[in-house]
Length: 264
Image (cartoon, rainbow, N blue to C red):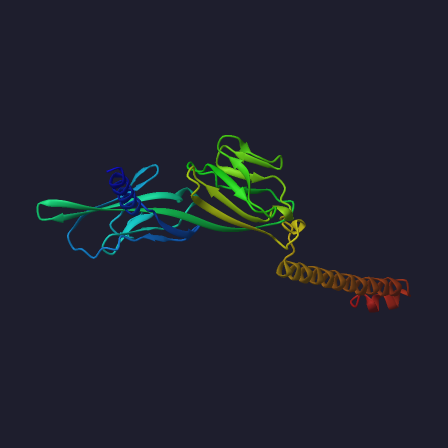
């Protein structure tokens, strides 16, 4: 009798687990993902999408202004992904079977990726401390270690957290490069950020960055100004020589002076 009870309990657990296993869905930050319902039924009455923070409005198609809309029979698309989209979702599809409503429930675990290139010495802000984040781990040192937890905050004096939104590396070093994972309370991965060191030097990131087009224009303007100045000096010298000749002629005899007045 006891063995039969254990067998029934095991069977129940297997059935329950199979019905509640989350479907893993991954997408890039700024991209789109699709939560598929895999149903071709024509008698769908209504669909509901529920996130960890509550119900989500699903537009009938992409023409509406929302980021979440229905596609095809009952698939749901989330576009322009942001970090706070990561987490668990439940999709409820209600079928109208004459007088009875049949329901299909599917759960999803949305995982968001991002890649960042950072210059040495630059401050790095990662908006990964979403509301359902429990801890952040990194393998930048060669093995996975915690750098932030919900209960204790940052674990390094080189880091800071900004109003529970941004995880901040104050001055980035090449040793900070690596993969950063954001996990929820159940250890599920919400966000993965891959950080690499930029080869561009930090001193070239200010507002006086070299621009070859601007430099060529500036050089052309300088050459034209020098040409105008040289022309003005040449004309001035010629006029000065003419004045000196007239002056020397005026010092001659009165007859010669009268003869050359018109010329001068």
